[in-house]
Amino acid sequence: GGTIRVEFEAIPRDSSPSDYIGLFLEDDTSSANVIAYEYTSMQPMGTVNLSPPKEGNYIAKYVCNKGGVADIKAQSTVVAVVVPPKSCPSDCSQQGSCDTVTGKCTCNAGWDGNDCATQVPTEWTVSVDNTIYQPDYWV
Image 1 (cartoon, rainbow, N blue to C red):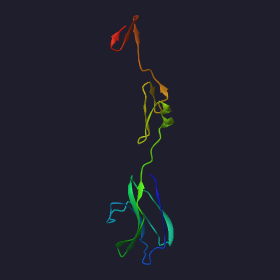
Image 2 (cartoon, rainbow, N blue to C red; image 1 turned 45 degrees about the horizontal axis):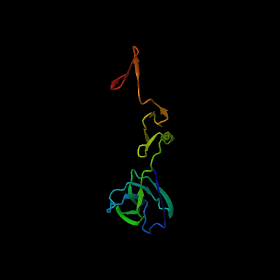
Image 3 (cartoon, rainbow, N blue to C red; image 1 turned 120 degrees about the vertical axis):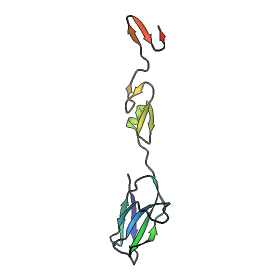
C-alpha cells in the first residue's frame, strides 16, 4: 500500500505527549475509529506518514488528547485513496487483453502463457490408420 504524507506545524498550546495525527475515514464524523496514527512527540512541526489499509476517502486530523479527552484541533481536506492499475507482463505481447485489477492477461485464441507470448494451435487433426479424424466430422 501507499502512504499519505501529512505535514503539521504550530501544535496547540494545550498539547500533550499523547497528541497524534490520525487518519480517519471521511464518513467517521465522530472520529471514533482511527485507521492509522503517529504521535507528534510534542514537536512544533514535522511530517508523519500514514498508510491507509484500502481504497477510500480519508481525513487526517490533529488530535489533542489531554486528560483522556480527544479534541480535534485541525484536519485536512478529504484525501481520496485509489488502487493504481496493475500492468500485465509484456503488455500481453499484443496478443490478449490486460485485467488492470489483477494484472493478468486473457489471451486471444491461439496464444497462451502469462504474457500471451506462446503460440498454440487452435485446431487439431489426428491421423490413425491412414484415416484423418477431425472434431465433429470424418474426412
